[in-house]
Amino acid sequence: MEPMPELFWDEIQKRGWNSYFTESITSNDKIEIIIIRTKTDFNKDKFAKFPDLKMIIRAGSGFDNIDINEALKRNVIVCNTPEANAFSAYEQTLSFIFALIKQHQICKDRVLKCKWEKDFMPNWEISDLRVLVVGVGRVGTRVAHVLQHLGAQVKGVDPYLSISEWKQKNIESLIYKEGIKWCNMFTYHCPLTDETENYFNEGVLNTIQNPVWLVNTSRGKIINESIVDQGISDRRIIGFASDVFAEEPWRVKKFANKPNVILSPHVGSYTKKAKIRMSLETLDVWSDYVNLHQSNTEADTRFCLTINKENKI
Image (cartoon, rainbow, N blue to C red; front, side):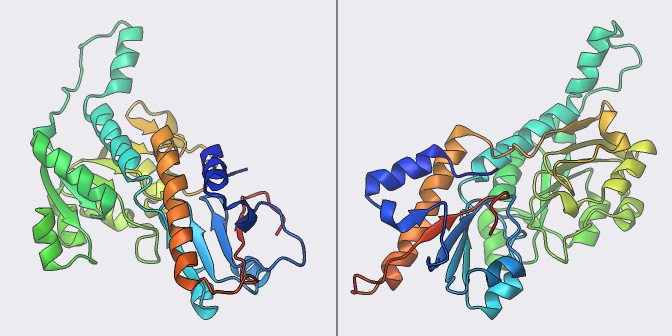
């Protein structure tokens, strides 16, 4: 189940919008706006159940759980709340990077086994890193700037940024195939698309010229998990950290128990402040749309249905 936070409903109550929102529907309801979260797959069949639909709000970042082609066919507007999770996601990324290069899990294991520093691979410093930030949007930009400030070399991959945007961000751009050869750390912050699925694949692993650290806080399918297993086994991947997986819940892979692998259950944006921002940003998107399209007739009432994975719709 993936309900909206209590704050969302409290804010609706405070603003006097109760009559516009419902969590349950009848056959007579004409739903025009729907709010979904991460685990709802809004596919063609769901579109067919809401013939009056005008807008989908994805409470969170990304659109990979929405059939965008079907939305285009039906002239349904699709929006999300990209700012809500940006801070928490970039902090999760930084925590992964420090935990990897300072070998937190390996160090704990050594303390518990009384091994201490014998045969210990030295920790890295931030200034040892050549980081390729793949996807230089809200999260990737923040990650890049912090790492630059701390002394890392940082370059970015993002085909959607203009020359002026790169200049404004003060991040050097590379094409992906060149970045692969240059970096010793990948951190992924791009959306899941046909182009980015399996973005870290066998071809990339065979092209890298240095052993690499690998971090993913974007979408699980961007990284081919079988290739991660291969890369860790032959030490071309020094360490791997991920908050996202190809399938969630995850069917545990062989590499999961390695001490240089850090995993978290898609909780990078799971903070109190992120929930507050998500609730308020969702309502801002809703109210902007309604105010823009609202007619002068009393009968033109908008409904916004919030649904989750378990709803039978």
